Image (cartoon, rainbow, N blue to C red):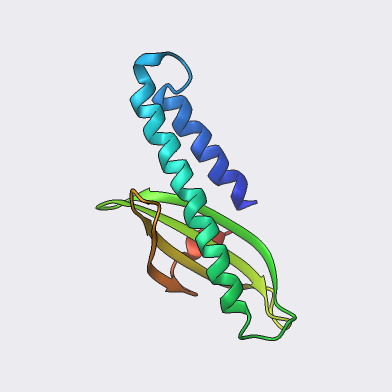
Length: 122
C-alpha cells in the first residue's frame, strides 16, 4: 500500500537526519517532527474537505485508499490523496495540495482528480 511508502520515507528521513542518536541533532529532529505534525494537520483538513466533496454524490461512494506526505517547493507542500469508488468505478482519485502555516492554518493550493495521481501509481 502507498501509506507504507510514506511511513517508510518518513522513517528513513529520521534515520538519515540522525534523529534519536544524540542531542546535537535536536534542531533537525524538531524540524522533521514539525513537518510530520503539519502533514497530519493537512491530512485531517483534507479528510474533512473530502467528506464534504463526496456528499454531492450518491451514498455508494467509498474511500478505498488514502495516501499523504510532503515535498519541498518554495515552501513545504503537503499532499493528501484518495482513491475511491463511486458505485460504478473503483478507480476514482482526488487529491489536495495544501500549505500549512506556523499557526497550523491550512490553505488549499490545488485540488482535483489530476493533482497528485503519482500517489496511486502502481
